[in-house]
Image (cartoon, rainbow, N blue to C red):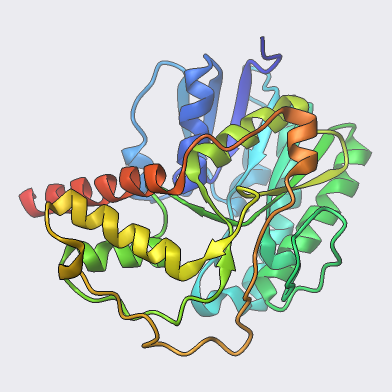
Length: 320
């Protein structure tokens, strides 16, 4: 029986946030979703008797006063500038650090006893080994630097305010509601429309995790995560990116009822990035030990569910 009765989720409309909201609601946990003002996706959060939506961006947190109810856990996933050139916009990324500290203060005002923050593998920079809590950090981007600073400074503030602090460095998560600019989503959308996606040689070995599994881990850490601990979140195994792309192609071919040979992949058409990371894999031993977490979904199962979601979205857009 979970001790958590009410949880706050910032950034509730992305792949991980949406899955986390659904997971918490499935356990009968009341959820307060802090949505960015004007977000089109917030309207797509389905109504639920245990779900309350509140428009509040990172910059709005200081104005959010204590609510009538006391909340137990605060899951902080909100972040600005996660893709493209904005990842190196130093002012924007610095505002995320300040926003994270305001999230901690808000969590305290709402009565939360635990703050679970979403970090990133970008905190490590270029690292060819398995990523664990004690792996040295040397971020290369403003995004990674800001995530590292946010994790460390929110830990200090939580200690001052008497809250348990859990920081989760998330690797590569895919699933419904992911950004359209992610590699998995862009490949799915290209193949669904019969286009050949341009790809690198795909020799990178990466660790992919389905969003529902990521949500499960975060849910478990709300109760079981140890104070002051950094956890790495992934599937715990790495495969060549080319293998993942072929499995995506196979899933889309099956969904469209056509031979996979009719959906070519542009493998090798793109060069590797200057600072291309060639190996990403999470050491999830601490996560398993403290929560009992184990990934449930295979990549084939998760990518099929994701491709079905994308196809439903595109068909819905055509009807409108």
